[in-house]
Image (cartoon, rainbow, N blue to C red; front, side):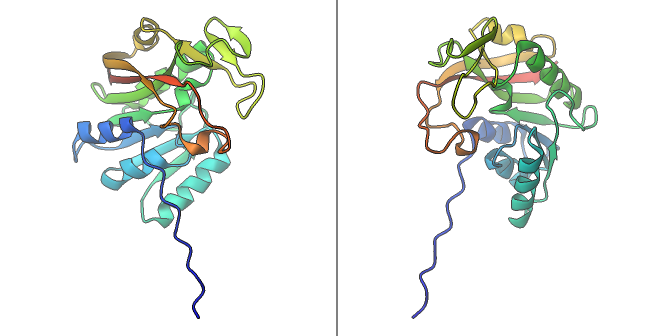
Length: 216
């Protein structure tokens, strides 16, 4: 009698902004950047049709994801590096995506990361990203680090600063390097990646800005 075979767990679906980026750039756009690769759900999609490079600020996670995606036959590179100091050449990328990385940090740190993303993007290149909204139920919880920045006092993100923005704060944050083409608030409890949080903790009341911008 043959032993029962286990069905492999399905891949976590990509973020909607990843799908929109792929649709917007066309098949011959050039290399795409995934900032905050996490478990690789977005990079997998980008790499299926483009040269794609990931960056994650957790070096070990970056190595694991690169190995896993290469085992799937995808020719990808995932760098382990801080988002404020990308090990990438100027104007290398035809588009960029960040669906979690820019939720975390002080305002000055996120500004530095945005400056780095702008440095590695070509002029006019699309940049799709998420930012946290002040209408998120977690706004105001934990320790106040600075205006609109709070660090949870417990849980899997204990001590990690989160920046929350209102409608005017989004373009103000991006204005030095990017032109916003659209921004809208979205309930994202069902979209948060399992890699990003304790699998046993059900997300609640999370609201993000979905932003589509272009490099000036």
